[in-house]
Image 1 (cartoon, rainbow, N blue to C red):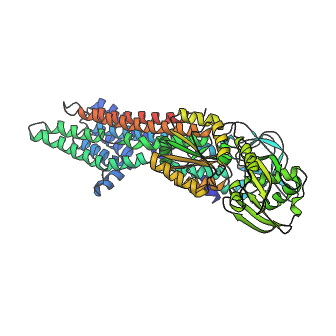
Image 2 (image 1 turned 180 degrees about the vertical axis):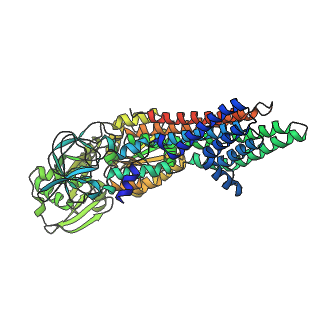
Length: 639
């Protein structure tokens, strides 16, 4: 396992690759053959033998594949080139046949180089984390290879060092540069109990970290694995090209055959028209067309990963470029997701006593509002952990009930109390609730089956970036932004209006969010849902593109989302859309350019001007231009 991993990371330099060495030898033989031809004439056996050697060495892999495909009547680039080169040799065009082999080999080398270049961002990710770490076991401290580190080991990281493993801080405080994982340029302060990731840079203090994952399970390893999988996945436009090539390639073979035999049968010169037919085979070779999509997809996904955005495949990259509507979960996405208690209004009973009872009931809940109440109780010095709670029941989407000191208490939304109170909610209390809700606060009520005892108002803080992100999305041409929340309408409207969102859907249960996403898909066809990757899973799954916030350290987000914003930063979303659109535009440019070059070159057959030289330069030139155009995607920056 260890050997395989390390071998995968250490790759041979491009110029030393075996395939390229054959090109060098073949090119040297071609030059020597030209020299011999100049010395002895083109009909001499010596240059012909050296040309043949150049063809066999440079085209060995090509011929093996081409002849194998030909025997199965499968027509692709290798088949076309094999027929063309063998045909050139048969009609005595040894020089041009050898040149075609060399130029085709150079063309393929360019393709390999472009794919290697596009994957550099992932190779650089592989080198981010150190291969060794200083580990303490018992009283001994010693450096150890990361593949020998176990979960539970204590890792010591000095200032200026990179973390080799994921873990939890058990001693020390420092700022960590997490750019490699999350794309955040601003260092983040980490202290005891905070989660830290392999590949991040410790800037200031000495940290002691308890290792929580083996090296192959770290967040960095998962990112590398997922991006590699994404880059290998076929995009829809690539599937279209493969299907197109399936019919296009045999059509070129038939066309070349007809060009080679019909004019001579009508009185033309056999040698001239067979040569034209061979040239058609070469110019018809769909190299540039086939590479037009994968280089663009690999480059764009690599660029996104470098900027802290994990796009899990070409299909998701293309879909993101055509989004029309983006729906956002409110809590933790548009807001910080850390609500705080702002108001406590008591109608009957002692404020601290009621707050302590509420905190005791909410103690086992994972809801963020419950957390806000417990924090408030702790801040007030209330010992709510000693309060006995019995018969605890969750009321889905409405609240919770429990027995405390032989009294059944209810904690929940105003809707819950509208149902359980015999006479509904008193007008005075309704007005107070409305007043708090207009301020964008969520109101929780504490009471019994007969009366309301207390109101607790909780407000979630809006992210500083939310307004800017929504504005940028509208500027990018997103037709509609929608906020989906379980909060009441007034709270939702107050927050939505401040952010500048175009449509607000409030008082939603999880199934309501799912239904709204389905409705949006029916109307607009292309819809993204942005959430935390854990909650609202049905809505994320139902959307065309599920975008998870804060993928770093969140296994669920990495596994379930189509796109994960590794930092908890919404500003990555407009960048991702811009990158996706540019990738789509580049793919279309590449396909159009490849086809136009083919058509123009094929038209040269009409006056009989097409030569093998023109054909191969048209094919190689198109491949080079398509490759360079795709690599421009690496320069798109997150601004």
